[in-house]
Length: 207
Image 1 (spheres, rainbow, N blue to C red):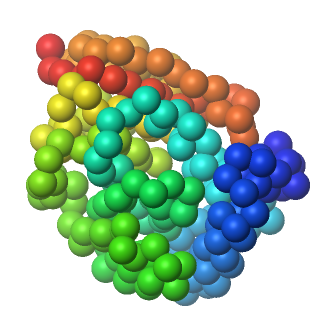
Image 2: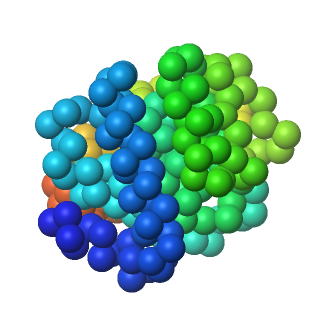
């Protein structure tokens, strides 16, 4: 997917105003990456396809989930959590333990005018207790699938939808997770990186 294709994908589905806001987020991300290592410098020229639209593709996969919090674990640069908050009206909780990244996420939400729907929690997810089971869990490059489910299971119930970009290891991580976790696992091909997969999991519980 080219950069133009990636921008067009967002524009066609979410409109020019949200595309513009996403572009503003991209500018903030590039600027802050000069101060801290948010994204690899080698990916700055492919910001839309590698990061923004790559995150945005999770939103259509959330259709059919219940109302409630979208929990983004290890949010780091705000991928996909800030992108989700820009493209939806859902409350988003970003859990991030690193202080400099927490500050960036909070400042970014304020600057983009989405702070009323974005909560940044400065801790590891194991310490976070949501007011009710969350509707959706996302995490990008945080931990192996079984370990990620274990660390976040206390935030979920059987109705929670898990949306987890896993690159080329998606199917092998699902196969390993099935030994410890029951539920429905599906690997959705990435639209931005055809050799990568997104794990979509529902009705998850320990065996």
